[in-house]
Image (cartoon, rainbow, N blue to C red; front, side):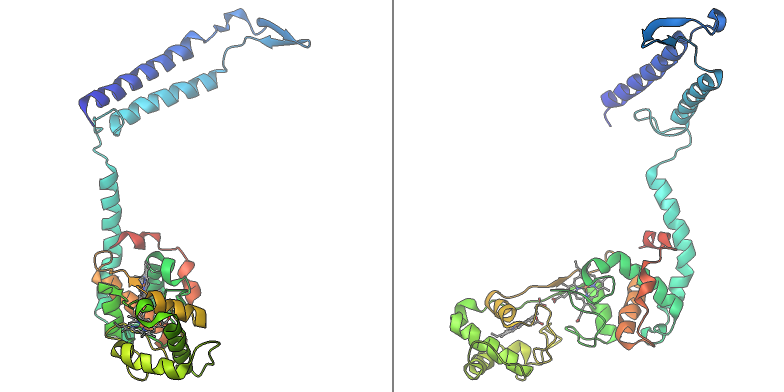
Length: 314
Ligand code: HEC
Ligand code: HEC
């Protein structure tokens, strides 16, 4: 804050405080007049008394003014003056973070040295991981992790990028970007209809429009490089399996045509800057447990906020 604004605040605050004290005492009627003096104002036969403030009330005002002076000396408030206690929001936050680090550091260290495959049997670890999921992942994947249009379901055994602990960890750490090119100009309207009919036939579904036979030719030409010859996809490229009737972007023929026509670019953000590797390890175990766990992790655990300071630790 520049010196001018700092002085501006100090002067205004001081004048206001002095004005309040003046107002309080200058308006205070002495009790000498007795309780019966009126302001002379009468309405509907009701007279307005001119009694002084009750003493307890007056003292309350005095106490608040004394408190405010004490507060302005102890804490920052007077422009650039930092207060004699040296309190700052950042210090306070750092203190909370340090406390949380101390509380969770040892627990995290123990969890991060346990392999994911073992961690999925540890209820306490999963409970903690569930909260981390709620804070960082649920906004996209849903609080039940089942995803929605464009956001993959993490509870089934269908994986775009692979479902081993190692692959899941890579996904969370570095993020993923899906790159499905747009084929509209290359295939044309009929071409898209035919290919979408062929895609549907891969999961034994009947298309409403288009010729799957003709579509198959185009598929061999343009699609197998990523989705492979039998359409089962390639995790290394993030090309989903098109033959299992599980859809990221919807499985109606209309939506499939849209995907082929305009392309898709789903983005899973990288979390290595946002979360420590310990937290990512715990999250990996959580995601892994959703399809490999003992009784499939109890998702109702997520919304219990008994460890609100967990979010403070990176
Ligand atoms: C901003 C939204 C967003 C957030 C936040 C987000 N994700 Fe994702 N995630 C996505 C999208 C979109 C995809 C699919 C990417 C694609 O289409 O290629 C994805 C994909 C994934 C996958 C791969 C699924 C598969 O089938 O291979 C995993 C695992 C995953 N996310 C876990 C997480 C975890 C754990 C978190 C929390 C740390 C998280 N995500 C936070 C949007 C998000
Ligand atoms: C360069 C590699 C590549 C080629 C070539 C390619 N795709 Fe894709 N396709 C992808 C990727 C990657 C995704 C996932 C996009 C995402 O996650 O956002 C995808 C997604 C899709 C989906 C959506 C699947 C779902 O679950 O919703 C369909 C349908 C599809 N592709 C069909 C085709 C067809 C048909 C062709 C040929 C005309 C084709 N793709 C060619 C990479 C490719």
